[in-house]
Amino acid sequence: MDNPRLWPSLVVASALTLVCAVAAGVTAGEAGTELTRGPNAAELRAAAEVEVAERWRTWEAGRIFPDSLPYAAEQGGRERASRVGISPDTGCADSVDAEAAEALALAGCRAVLRATYIDALRGVLVTVGVVALPDEPRAARARVAFPAAGKPVPGLRPLAFPGTVSHRFTPAVRQAGSVRQAGPYLVLTTAGQVDGRPAVASSEQRPAVFAFAAELSERILAELSVPVMPDCSAEEWQC
Image (tube, rainbow, N blue to C red; front, side, top):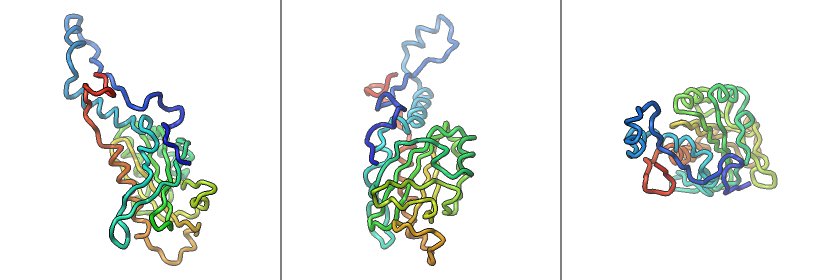
């Protein structure tokens, strides 16, 4: 279930080392100067963008999906959702519905990372999915494959863990979904009730019950997508 390690077979170091490379095509007379100068502002910005795009595989799973996340309670005040588990599988096609999988494939989906959370009252389950795309334009194009009005289909498939409170969380249980995008990432959610009640069996729709799911996704997306300018004096950067 919970996996604090790096994503399997995808990374060999926990911190991204970026080399601020000099541009090709400099003349022989300029080569010495180019090789000894520090990176300029444009190169630093490009390096920062690359670092953001690689966070899905260089950050530990527990950093992307923390043990708990705060959200605004329906009744007011603040509560925390607790993580049930993290999937070790990162395949794109099996993580979303077929209609959406095609759009992700066309956009060059690199991975879909998923974790399931339960709300503080232990009545609602939310699977959060981080979709890593090659760049921001392709992420924006892929976003349109997912409903923007809170409908869960086509969308992220729920992640259930046998022997836990989430074991009834099947696709039929989904009652709400969300999609957010920033940089090269989409963050999707799908939510349903712990008791495994199918969406068609719910006589009273209460969208506010599931509203916190989007707040969880926004927190995860903010952490993933905000760039940090390289610090050439720090160990994790090689300039």
